[in-house]
Length: 175
Image 1 (tube, rainbow, N blue to C red):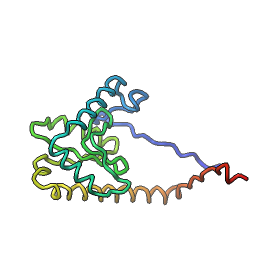
Image 2 (image 1 turned 135 degrees about the vertical axis):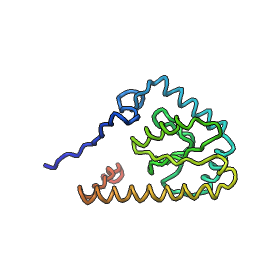
Image 3 (image 1 turned 30 degrees about the vertical axis):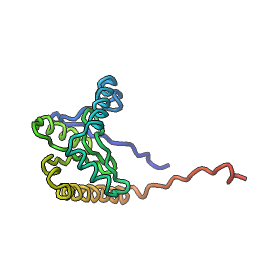
C-alpha cells in the first residue's frame, strides 16, 4: 500500500497579514455578500479601464503567452488585481497617481503568503513606452517559470512522476 500524499498548508506566523483559509467566501475569510460586491467592482473596472490599463491590455492581446495568459481585473481573495496569470502565480499591478501605497504593500504581502508574486509598474511608464514596460514583465514571467519548473522537478525526484490519467473508453470503443 502506498502512502497517501496530502496537501500541507503552512500555518501563518503572527506577523503575516494573509487571510486565513476557511470554508467561507470561496476559500477566503470573506462573506459571500462582500465577495459579490468585490466581483461587481471588478466588472466595473473592466468596463471603465484607465488609459494605462487599456494600453497594457492591448499589448497583452498582441502577445502569445501560451498557457500563461493574463486576465484583467481578477479577484484574488479580497484584492482586485489588474492582470493575473494564475498558472505562473504572477500579478501585474498598475500604480496610478494618488494610490494608497501602504494598502498596496499590505495587499502584496497577503498575496505573497498564498504564493502570488506582484509586479508593480507605474502608469506613466506604461503610457510613455509600453515596450519598455513589458521588459520587467517578461523577466518576472521567466523567473516564475524557472521557479515553478525547479519545484516540479524537485517534487518529481522526491515522489516520482505524476501518473497520467487515462480517459475512459467511449461507447463506440467498447464494442
